[in-house]
Image 1 (cartoon, rainbow, N blue to C red):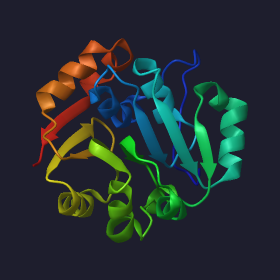
Image 2: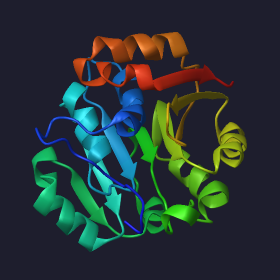
Image 3: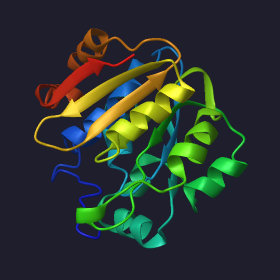
Image 4: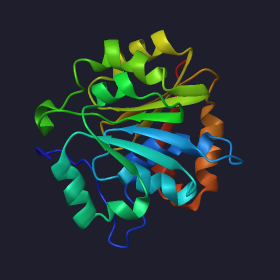
Length: 212
């Protein structure tokens, strides 16, 4: 989309790639004894959902997507409907202002603009993050995928949550941040990834760092 790789699917339909695996990985940290609910801000082709469903098939996703064409394309070429996502068409800010449900995990993967100038929406850091945090259940995780906004995002996240962990993806600009009320220990996250066959292929691409 506009020169940016927004989603991917392997020919066998089972995998995506290390960036989407890294975004999905924190969902594996949720307790396995109860179904997990996820609010996905920026559904695109559903790659994060596809990655997560391989190790948490019970996860229920509510996916927010602004562009009907993206959803139609994902349905035609990426088998989106097979993932069982509850799709909400609309602007993520409007949805955050009106959504009343609470979730175990909120994933933010919103980008605007062409590849050379891809960026987060201007409203996200000041207005969007507090709204997104309000949608979390106690002990829930907020996960964000960044490219150029890493420093600003880190500062904003630490204004909203006391603990922050970074997942860097080798050979990519992406930095994924996990904000939480309790620490996410990098060693535990790495061990969790190794326990799931769906994530094992990406673990060598990922670098974990606890920031706070």
